[in-house]
Amino acid sequence: MNAVSNVLIVGGGIGGLCAAIALRRKGIEVDLVELKTEWTVYGVGIIQQSNVVREMAHLGLLDAYLGAAYAFEDVAIYTTEGVPLARIPGQRLAGPEYPANVGISRRALHKVLSETAIALGVGVRLGLSVERLEQDASGVAVLFTDGSRGRYGLVVGADGLFSKVRGLLFGDKYQPRFTGQSVWRYNFPRAAQIDHLANYQGPSGNAGLVPLADDLMYLFTTSYEPGNPWMDEASLAAELRQRLAGFGGLIGELREQITDSTQVVYKPLEAVFVDEPWYRGRVLLIGDAAHATTPHLGQGAGMAIEDAVVLSEELTAGGSLDEQLRRFMARRFERCKFISDSSLLAGEKEIQRAHDFDRIGLVKRMLEVTAQPI
Ligand SMILES: Cc1cc2nc3c(=O)[nH]c(=O)nc-3n(C[C@H](O)[C@H](O)[C@H](O)COP(=O)(O)OP(=O)(O)OC[C@H]3O[C@@H](n4cnc5c(N)ncnc54)[C@H](O)[C@@H]3O)c2cc1C
Image (cartoon, rainbow, N blue to C red; front, side):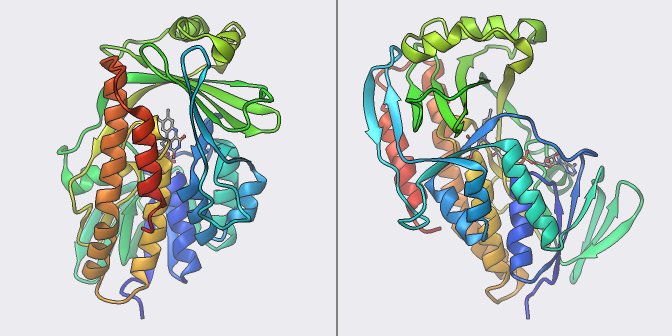
């Protein structure tokens, strides 16, 4: 018999939904509350690398997921002018018949995850959060923001960067901080040569092109934005063109087609990292609530998804809940810290314009680490 028979997940993003799916597949009852009244996500894409494809297989989602994604193998690195510098072959961690990496639109991913969670019997309630959590030896009494109540063996805070559950556990000890950089994204029809993840080393920030579908790719670039300035939405296209001014090659060609400010997705980058353990008693943080970092290595959601799978494994592997959560931490902490620290380092080196920084070496190391069993 499991130490925990029912779980409340707070937050219906990538981490919360994957945790709900993983726990339901192990026979644990799951309720999920999501703050948004309309369960939507913004319309850009996300890179998911070989370790994520492997975990999608563990979640039993691979076919639906690959059906909604653009599968690719290699990651290539180019100069500012588009001259190839390195090509890192993909690792087929889910098995030889499955691709190494994918690009997927966030909306398509959300559709696969939310439909699967509901089909598996997760009790989803929207427009709702937790107001108060009171623990005793056998469970957590939860007061929801609509005044309703529940009782759970475990509460999982998967409520992202500005986690309310983190605040309920640790007060204001952990606050997201602006890293100095922002990310800009813009969708384009896929260029035929972008059948892999293409990274371009810029003069003061990187740019990249990610295939999402046969007819769709997105461009991203990072920029140094001291003081986190307010951006006028009407001028976002011009601002993005200006951030890409130093690039030649394909990025330079695409730059001239960035004309619609409503299609520019601008995001200042913020990070937070909670010291271990990420739990107190029967309340645990996963995903960005515990370890939000920058997207320089494309692994933030990957770490949230791995958290979800490992949690479901440990909760059904015997022992007391405390032993289970300790084993969870032992498998997650160093790996997430490596990703968090390395992603932040890559951003800092861009800000410093440290052209001698071995970015290719860092990407290779990340691929080695994430290929290891968890
Ligand atoms: C610009 C950018 C690009 C990125 N690109 C990549 C990439 O290519 N690959 C990758 O792996 N990662 C990427 N990431 C990181 C990735 O988006 C996050 O790591 C991932 O979304 C974390 O998932 P999560 O479920 O923990 O949090 P979130 O996705 O933030 O989900 C949290 C959910 O909780 C809900 N919520 C919030 N507060 C409450 C509350 N009080 N009560 C109830 N619900 C609440 C939110 O509405 C949301 O639905 C990127 C991040 C950024 C900023």
